[in-house]
Image (cartoon, rainbow, N blue to C red; front, top):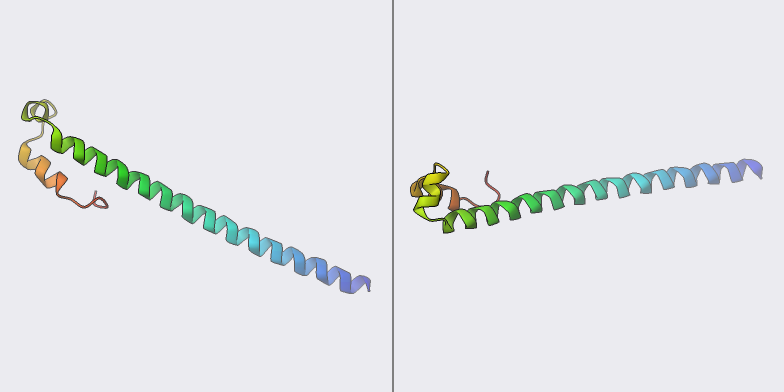
Length: 79
């Protein structure tokens, strides 16, 4: 009976390690997704601000209106 109990403990440990590994991979994937969504959100906000800047402000930062149009026309996932 001791041998049977030992096998159950080993099986339980293997299952626990498998579940832990799965949970860690899901956590890493969700963290990666959240970081990506934050970057996309920041790009959208930055491009929106850029589009609203006056020509004078754009000149101060060294951008032309045509350069801003190129940037603003990008999709949120594009760098």
